[in-house]
Length: 354
Image 1: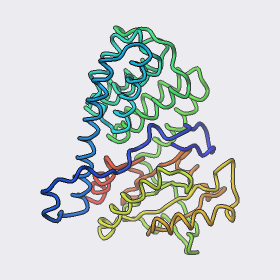
Image 2: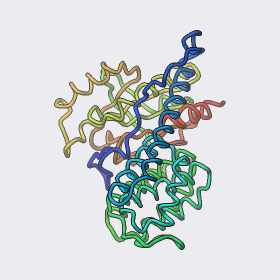
Image 3: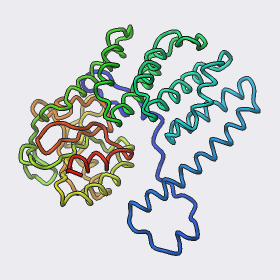
Image 4: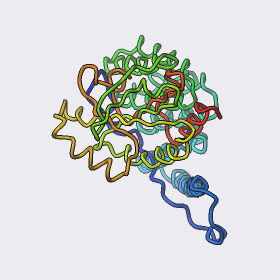
């Protein structure tokens, strides 16, 4: 995630990144007949990409087994980083568990990556409470019972791990569990940055189930936009900036979901945060970049520019870093946070009524 330098703590950098939608190896049968839909093409590409990533993990695992000392740590790091980037947590879980049981010789970075894989595999499997308990143990100086002792994680690493687990819990609609974990972390954290992070994320979670803060402004075409005028429809607020590349990668999936669900009542509203860069920029300075981004990506929905006072939309929704988005139901309440390729379509369809 990219820091906005706005209200409270922020995490620097985009966690592990997201893989580009690289094509899978084409199969002859795919060339012989036209696919049924864009979604089918995406599914086939993602399936092929996952298969290739699994092959890479298998080869890295074989390399790990043949290495020792610093070379082994480097191989472990590559292995876990690829597993995290490709979201293949459960594939990498056995090796992560082995590191956590017998990892006296592993570097702190390898232990951290193994912890992240182990926790996220639990979340992916639906073992939410054990995942949160493992997270709490990882944030402490020592390990959980039965695991080797390890030095306390650096603050930046703790924040990265918290964000990874927070996003996965939110993805699975485990809002109450995420809130409970953040409350414990906030109470027990010795570092101000960790306490501030927990406070900021709790502020965002507090919006779930409550009326969405009103917002109104003038879009890039000079038209007045009011959230209240969209009541009765499902609204996706997308907080973005032209200088944060993960947003560019996400635009296409948002456009597809918007195009396929607009007739059923989905509306999208972009909130641009270019003015927040480097402690604050005048609108006239960043406006050319905003217009260029909208034009280059053919963004079809209106865009408001974040400002001060009543137009500080990011503050109203507790947004301190990007990319971020908020899903608002037909009744005007907040029902979803930080949707991505894993749950965007599903959450939108549920909000629209099946």
